[in-house]
Length: 309
Image 1: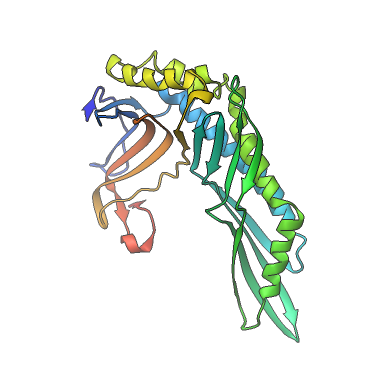
Image 2 (image 1 turned 120 degrees about the horizontal axis):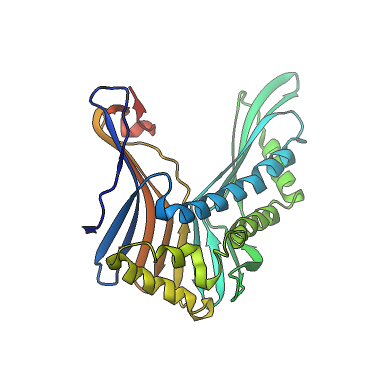
């Protein structure tokens, strides 16, 4: 892997010997697996349009679902509290003018308190969008906007736990029925389409000629990166109807830090913003945050990320 730039940002930390390296990096690989990377300081730079595109999609998706779905579950009898969690990444597959979406994670939960035969119980109920749920639609060949998005294999997986041994399965059924009555499948489909199409309003980032700002980026990177990036850009510019297979992954950075158990000399978070894969070429933009001598990392089995000491 050839590194064309080593620009990084070092930030002082509270510990005398602690330090940090934060940077954003683009990586391109060719069909022969030749790799080229180019790093930029975090917080702007030439990758900012791509970061903006990723943030736009995820922010729009959350805004379209969290409030409305939370309001949907409030009428359930005994409702105490609730939540809606929306996560990525989102994977898109393009083929001959059509596109399919998969990957958005939607979780709906409620805490419900009821009494039966003089016994009170509190139940925590969760509905999770099944991983097999997908969306497909047609791509406008001029603008890249998706229309007529349809949902396939829609399914909500349910789970619950209660504070008593009473069988509260009917409560789960009521929540599922609420979801069906409020056309949650269509709400999620519309949210996915709306979040993606929002990119059309940002310098036409869905159009073949300016897809995900590749036209701007190819003018600002070194020649060794520009050549393979130019190939990807030109293939997309030739029109979605001419693309046999292309995958795009829109990330959802969480910046969870991991490292060796204990007082780690080095711990880091690695998050992807965008990936494009076509004809054996790949283009990925990611963020990397390294922390030296300032993190304590719990055992991996705990599932917890590292934290500052």
